[in-house]
View 1 (cartoon, one colour):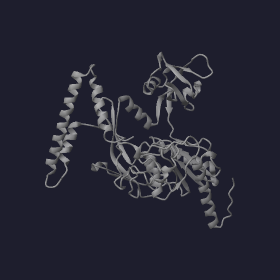
View 2 (cartoon, helix red, strand yellow):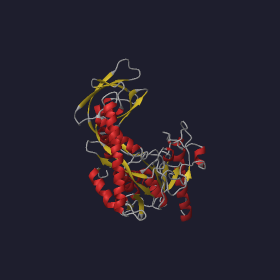
View 3 (cartoon, rainbow, N blue to C red):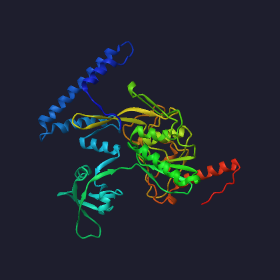
View 4 (cartoon, one colour):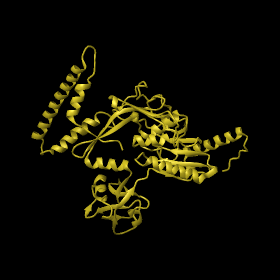
Length: 447
């Protein structure tokens, strides 16, 4: 996870005084002083508004909630990805990126206003206890879940390894609620999945980029190639509906396929936000054919991987245009345990292109036709998104031919119904057949 930086007002003021911006004949110092003066004017205005609310609101407001609300409003006014996190949200974010937590091992959601088990996680206390997908959780310990938020439910069910929690569930076909007392344990969150799709073609899916993703991915690759043995002809890397995650994990995954040269670069307003990340030849995978699957749900870190492999001509990209989030967020911890996610830089692919609000265009466009047709909301559709300075009028989609047929965000469970995956397999087999033909080897494709 990225180093956490603490926001200090005094340090910011000093920084403003030291850095400044030169405009015309004005000196950096005078510009910095003018900026600070404007800032203090606005702080006085905020203080005035806060005082009026505290004195006159119909009920006595909580000062903490007022200030947190103001911080939230400040960040959401910047762009769609800068945000405020309460202490609970901040802890949850850290868990998501670390890749494990202590609890009972279920994914939950709100369905028809009822707290519902989406699925138990394999080989966890909840799974072994017999909790099933679709179970309605009506009580946690002695607390009813009626009108309970997901965050409150998570807080009650998580806890130290070895401690117990009792939940009451209602299951279809069962007349009375069933009570389960479950002992909490360490629950790993795996971000890499594999499945057998073809005797000669490997398949690895990355669902998000967490702290352990790169290690999991390398292990999955090694296992896949060993299982295929001499029959191995190529790899499908599935990044569809991958919302992103840690920048460093995305770089480590891309580095496993790129021998040398840049993977991604970032550029911010401050010099210390400008970085260029280059590939390391050590540990690079062999040069086998490769396809990367993407769609409108592929965002941020997954776009960094797809963009790097596309620019390096290491893989063929198949699917539909990606989300188009070409910005980097830095996490800052605040003194009360809350946190801020702040957009601090734009990122660029190895060729220097920004995909902000435009996304990565696949080399071969393939749309899945199964499931309910539902177009993806992309970065360009979000109010207040950053503009792409490399593209004129990035919000004008009138010439976007892909929008004539909305991209699907549903990936079929049955590989045979997954048009994007089937196209990838056919392409990899075709490339292998073509290579054999030109090497003089007897070529034969077996289905």
